[in-house]
Length: 235
Ligand code: MN
Image (cartoon, rainbow, N blue to C red; front, side, top):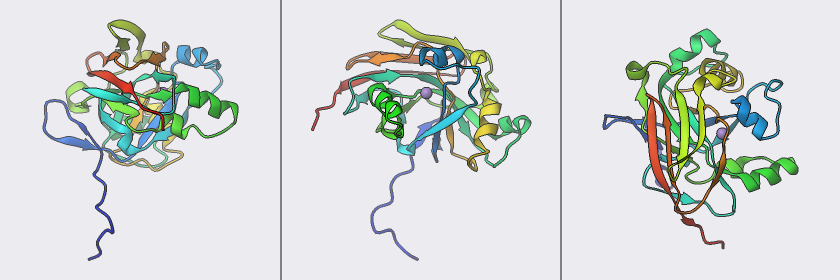
């Protein structure tokens, strides 16, 4: 039997509400501009664009509790509250009508974004990776299984900073439904158990500052509450 030359990395995972068991994370996919009002606030026409995807590293997922570090190399850390879809099944070329059967459960998280770095990347036609996929860039609540909550379709999704509501919408406003997102994504990659999908953010994204208290919820699904840590020291 061969051995690894270094200690193998731990498997990133997310808590399961009301259980000691955890959901192991394989990959993290994110949907861009999946709410019309957010597409407009980013200067895009929501009616003419099919869904597009980007990724974060699996170990960008951390529990959305306690203190989440303010990352280095940005002066504009943005919050994007999103329902998180956890897949317990997989496949390629999944039909819309078969897609929800792949879902194990749901949670709520934040697609933390270095908006200043992303703006430069867009301007220079460079990849978004480090604007989106940095350490602890995907804080996520505990997950709830479909067996408990079904498939949420019209729940309110919101985020408040220091007690002030910044983002508020409903899942009904999603341009592409969860089933459509899964189906689209499965045209590009073979989905697998452990994959998470951050399903897009409603309007109202904005900056976070060190010390901010951030609370998010998808009603009847999950919620989180964390504090933003002190700004990283620049090297
Ligand atoms: Mn997002």
